[in-house]
Amino acid sequence: MSEVVLPLNDRGLAYGDGVFETVLVRDGRPVLWEAHLARLARGCERLGFPAPPRDTLQALPGRAPAGLSVLKLIVTRGSGGRGYLAPAEPEPRLLVQHLPFAPAEARWQRGVRVRHCELRLGIQPRLAGLKHLNRLENVLARGEWSDPDVVEGLLCDSDGHLVEATCMNLFWLRDGRLETPRLDRCGVAGTLRQALLAERSMTEVEAAPARLEQAEALWLGNSLQGLWPVTRLDDAEGHALITWTIGETHRRLQNDAQRLLGYPSLT
Image (tube, rainbow, N blue to C red; front, top):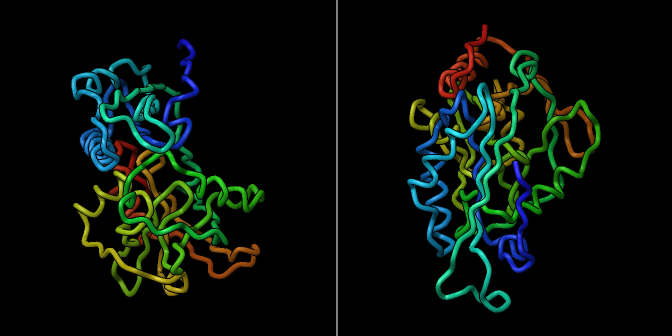
């Protein structure tokens, strides 16, 4: 693949003025494709520039290599404007990358250890749910730990409500009910999360971190990796708060995700 040269005045590079999608592709067939296209279009519309033509986007997954891969799409507003003032007639720029991919299958089976992060996400409803290019909060949060046994960090907003992990959505079972954080003020509304909400009885809630210590099960998930069951949750200093044993309760929701993404069921 030839190297893409991005001009220094591209607004995505200069200001994070754009959106992106990472799509699981299996033998040229994109998974949850309509949901990814809808979120991309929604992001472009909310930022105020046109999305790439659908015909252009529809042709991209077919260029992926055989087997599993990731199609990464980046759409910036393009170049132009003066400072923060965007051009009146933007010409968006589409960047495309195909990457080999293998899911972390061991984490499906054995589960993962996660921790709380100290960083708090800023509240901005106009950007809530979008996968926009301004991900510095996530970069800073991911820099809070170096322990290889900790695979993810959980993030709250500036009011102290649970939102997401650095690159995954959160799901938990409490009092027999599935819950996931509301994402109407910040956070990324994942396509796997959307598919699970459409299939399962699940409540979007506003919850403090202590709610997780009352949960019977906790998962992290996205449309590439599926769901990882959490076996240990630490505080921001690395001290264990709660542990879980993986059981049938974990597998039921995991297998819903496995089916949606075309992965084998788990026992």
